Amino acid sequence: MSDPTPVLDVAVDAYVRDGHTILDGIRWTVRANEHWAVLGANGAGKSTLLSIIAGYEWPSRGTVSVLGAEYGRCYMPDIKRRIGLVSAALGERVYRTDTALDVATSGLYASLGPWQTFTDADRARGRAALERIGAERCAAQRFATLSQGERQRALIARALVHEPPLLILDEPCAGLDPVARERFLADVARVCGAAGGPTLLLVTHHVEEIPTLVTHALWLRGGRILTAGPAREVLTSTHASAALGAPCEIDERAGRYALRAVERP
Image (cartoon, rainbow, N blue to C red; front, top):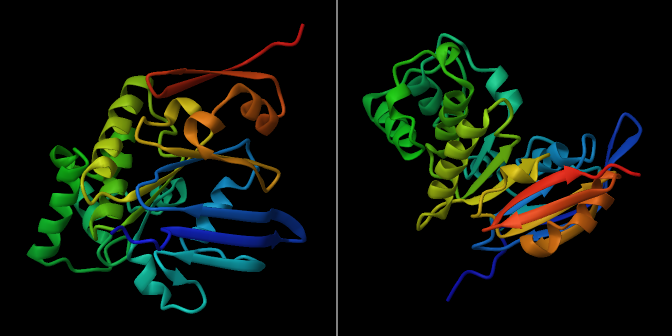
């Protein structure tokens, strides 16, 4: 029998920053064997929502439960070890002298930079994480010399090194050319789609960045959930137009999506 406990159960009544309401009335549940894309325009609240889920921000009012643990009633370092997070902010904090192997291995200690001494066993786990995401050949290269796609793989290896059941990717395809993007998405889908792989939460502006692995999608607008549910029901022209505030058309082909803005006559 499958575990009925949701992977994620969010009831954020409000998140207020500097007097501005960023999130309002969020109700969202993610269950086992679901993989989600979170979409919306700039300022819709996507990254803030995932920061709350990852335990780096706290709702002004509401509750968050992840992997059966309710925030505020659990030991946060333990739950954070069960969440893999990759974001642009994290990439900016990497010491450019660190190698890809250093970056991957640092995930074992939730550290960045030359502050941690790694054992041979630690490095073996870091190398295994790089291999898992197809980045083993970059292990000895300095982070500063890596391509954008290689940097993203190193950061995902860091997130995967402790084998978390939940993987959060915030705009992971930013800066990738189309070929690098497709290769990267294929590797992510392979990792998350494998037996025992993590549940994926993917934040993006672009429907083209949603791999076929994704089963569900959510549109945010103005800090509220506009619609959420099975991907084919949510990733439609009508919902995209409402979320983005302009006429849009979405085409679907073999489980992949493309969006274009429609010029008004």
